[in-house]
Image (tube, rainbow, N blue to C red; front, top):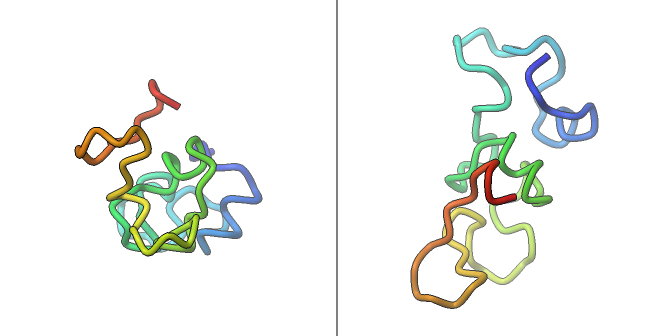
Amino acid sequence: MDGLSNHNERLAHTPAPCRSDRDGIGDAHEDYDHDGVDNRTEQLARTNPAKRDSNHNRVPDGREDPDHDRMTTTWSPCSA
């Protein structure tokens, strides 16, 4: 198990097993939409791992600044 729910596996196009593309990187650590946020963190942050801009504000998920401190907020499992 790679830590992704079945729902997020489907969204990220990474069906089981844990390393579906056999590149040695677990699916949870892949970044399917290339937004700078890995699939596991997208799951924890409740963003869409298949869309660079989950909330459609023209800012990729990895460059969001939800606390408006002019610094990109880095999502981590500890802050989710």
